[in-house]
Length: 355
Image 1 (cartoon, rainbow, N blue to C red):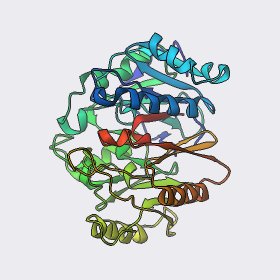
Image 2 (tube, one colour):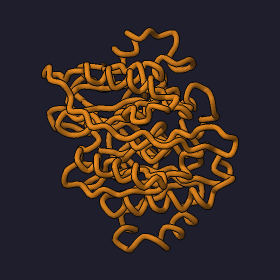
Image 3 (cartoon, helix red, strand yellow):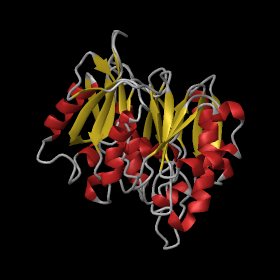
């Protein structure tokens, strides 16, 4: 993933496309927690979780880490990663507001004809609609690019707010998103839905944008990211959080989501293969507020899928088995995500793959 190239442009074009997450990856990015992030009350626990994710990723592919204290992170990782895994890790000195790489890292596009360099699209990250400080996180892509962490053409899209967790791609021209998130305040107003869709299609080289109107996961403070409720998988498959708990306060909303998913058709006019993931038993924080536990927030890497688990053995097992059915031939790795959800995200939210 390293390069000394420093090319840039202000736009991409429809010769490029957004690959599916199971496309071969050049690596994954993590943005490391520190004491000045919101992780401070449980910094030791979340750091342990980050080490587990880092080891899982580095076993299969390169890992880029943006960290305020690179030497400290390197020393910590060396205690858990073997030599081969450590050889795949690159750590860069960068400051950060928070750790949600999915939403502030590059979105990587490839040329449709296989000719040319990848495009590294840098959208504006504004803390999910100006809810939280994001100035340092929004600057990370440019910093990492100038440090040689990424190879490709830098595409400046900082005039448009878009978070990686708000979109899903099947790699064949269809982008899926949620109307609740992309039309939320402080994103791209006064643009209309039609204008936002056209811009996404233009920049990401998409043919279709599918808007989901249901499935608002309680505790999700991103305004409803798609990667918490519905995910693409190979062979026109959708993994989704199903309404498996009739007594749950979210039940009706997820029944409506399931109904909408059943009505969708692929670009070829065929129904999607739907694989339901169980809805978690509620997990509350210390103030009694529900946290956004979800099995949909898994990360696909080269040869493996890293799946969040929540110490709910029966549900965890069902989710792992369903994801294994969708990703045949992949190793399925469960990592306890109970600390991550204390800050209202999970494993996919913390990571971003490059291709």
